[in-house]
Length: 386
Image (cartoon, rainbow, N blue to C red; front, side):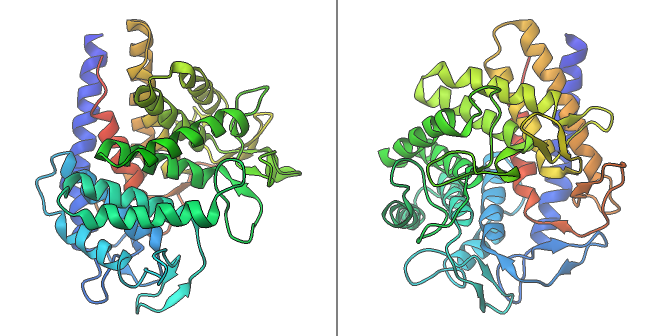
């Protein structure tokens, strides 16, 4: 046990040092567009930012990342990034109705104006996390409530959950619901009103009732308008990274709601993702399975490795015995080592994004959007103990 505790401490220290000393400084100092505003989507592996259109979700994720950094005790400057991204969300990205454009050019021309459920979930998360570090800024809460009420009035599913578009566009998706669930939990933690908890409760129940396969406990991604798995191959897709991510959220919800019925389904999600969705030879979680747990796509994205970490921190928190807790911590360390494979780049603080099935990384710029995943996982790992 002492050796395991030492390994945990070393891994926590190593990851936090990489984050504080390298990643957060480079994505602040290089990643902020000081001429046009907002943040760059990517930095190439030579350390040069690349000019491209800006997705609203990226600005939202960088607000989260630097607000979370402050909550973690990062001693460096964070306001520069938070302010730049909030100005982008409240400026070029903002529509007249209080919702957000999905994509805006670097020159602030709207590229894609249509409603994107996923983007709005991240905007809500951004405002919640910023509000945690700026509780005096009531505008953050006001903007979040405008988006929340627009979702309810314009995009609510007639029974439960939310639509992808109005008029309806199929398939309905679990992934934006997952991030709305995450945002609602953040607002509950930030002291938001009771409506956040009500929406979180609805999504949690919808997950157990409809998203989870009734026979094998896996989580499907795509549904018809009545929350049945959509016909054809799309209805059979499982993403192991999302299995881990939902498990982390459901265990958090069990603690907030006081209802332990969410823990067993969460454990089953982790079991599936670890046993079938993780390549233990490469020590990475892969992209997609079919619902019979056979491999659909064996490439391994960075983000899935962070969700594997978060899931084991959550499981460790509800472990029923010392042995179970030690097993969770051991798997957490293994997952962290899988993530660190992606950090082996010439400039510290950047990272790879895709590992191919043959064990080679795709040569491409580092995406800003991944920092959200990384900082959340490292923050969660700092909470783990034996």
